[in-house]
Length: 284
Image 1 (cartoon, rainbow, N blue to C red):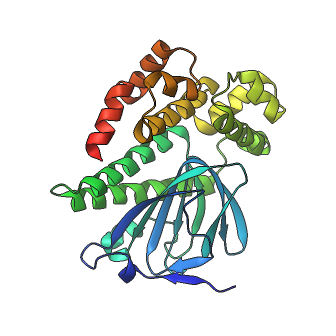
Image 2 (image 1 turned 120 degrees about the vertical axis):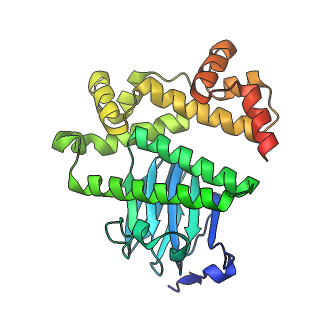
């Protein structure tokens, strides 16, 4: 199978060899390809397959991966699993040599680096800051993007080293890791329903107490925190991309009470749903 080659000269200006884009199950590069620049991607939500060197990796929300120049890879949809991925493309000279040297092996792909909840939040903040600077392009935006990207590279390097060093949950946790992640994907697909801890545990074929403990070990979040986070992310997308009333966003996101929805949304985002929508549209 022929490998499609992408070159930075076709996509990036020489004086600022960087670009950021959002990928989804409807918009991504389908054929096997390589590029003469580096690529760093973050799975913001959902799930898809990632093929590298003939091996398939199952990517899920919270995963990072890095592809060096000239390494062939491709993404593949998972049936019934939408996804949203932030893709950062940049030439090696865009960041310092020292920052790239922190990677375990900068010339080898990192097909999947799994992040615990606190690090997922840090990456969310970094990628959102990069996309905001890229969109607004205010004075000094190039400096900010470069600085945030270097932070992301360092975080990736540290998490990759930890992932290779040990399994924090131990052998027993590792044996159930796949089933717990399947339950997380179930939550991501059924968040609009009145889900209970018992429902997610049933998907994992584990007792509710044991499932709850494993979920906390693997993601850093409780069941309620996981479900609420998925619902708020969906609400943010609806507020940003539709004209639905707040009460409609509330119910379509799985909340049963608009007052509770407003309270939780403000606690997690710092602003009310209406303020979030206005702020998003002012930025865009």
